[in-house]
Image (cartoon, rainbow, N blue to C red; front, side, top):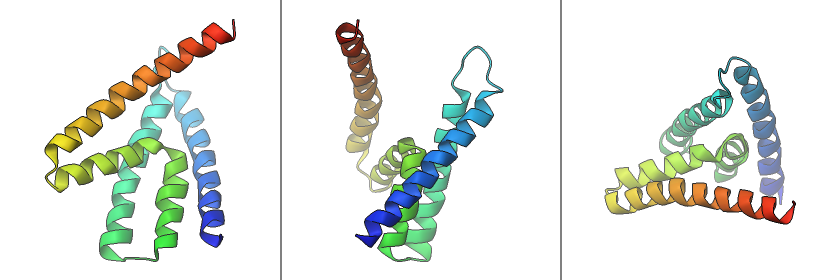
Length: 126
């Protein structure tokens, strides 16, 4: 139960961080380009790479604290960072077909799902 609460706290901090980073960067965006989202996703992907090496490969801190930072904070800041780490780990382990399938299906299936959700909501909520 304690780990779950700590993950929730990390998640709250990650969500607030996402909001402030996104809105701060988005002010400089031209033509409606989602620069804030891109910056948050790139930063989150970069940070999850660092966190994984530091917390899992080097320091090997307690699993609950890894969960607070990686699942809680970075997971709430951007799930794209988790996607990036999973894809890279598949590649590092030599599972090239699985990595390619995961990358392509994550991008395209999620785009199709978002499109379907938009269309369904627009249809129902006319």
